[in-house]
Image (tube, rainbow, N blue to C red; front, side, top):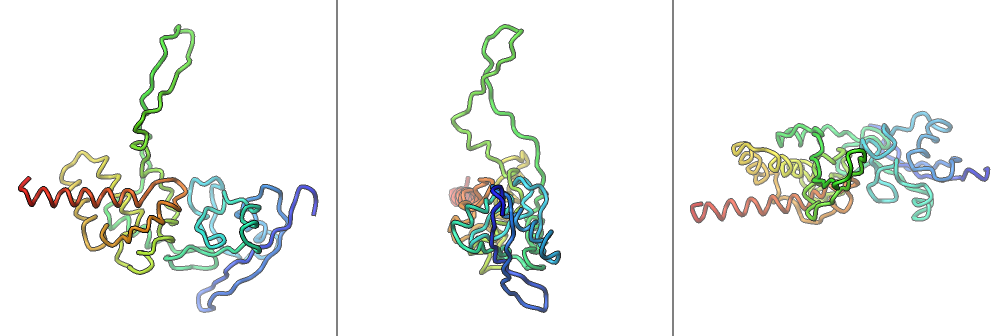
Length: 257
């Protein structure tokens, strides 16, 4: 081990269909400042080519490397090995919960996206809404611009920030107990689409989906999804907002509004 590298021990939950699951220990040399995903890369490159895990962007933009690290759902690409090692030795790495395991740390996300489809959502990232700005009355030769942060900045936090990592599904107790639940991501998407659409018919249809059999009333209000979301999408807050909208609609109907 050099001054620039450290030894790290990982305990990985291995799985293959028909073989069951088992824990396997690995020890690798990694550079200081290494992330857990880098350690898994090192295991694959130097010790075991059969280790299955997903990776892509390496900077928390794609959600591919979501997994459970020391019993908590996280993105492996931004979780420091040193931090994880302080929590537990060896670092335990497992696949996400509430999604079928394909092999080792890889889960089948087809059901996750099927719930999006069932919610009539097409997952896209539209253009960022432009924040209001004020421009100082400076000479034309200067291009200095002062950005004024609005007090209601929360309204600019959009569902499009979702990276479809599946962490909210993994931590959700309702998903663990109820296959019919649409889930936090799909319901957050319904909320966002209702905010964006100018079509009253579509808005009413989406609210009916949220009020349906797999909708917001199956949520146990644990708020684990919001606490664990790496992008601060706040699925639980959006589910609570949908409940309020549904109750307002029912109240309005009672009073003939």
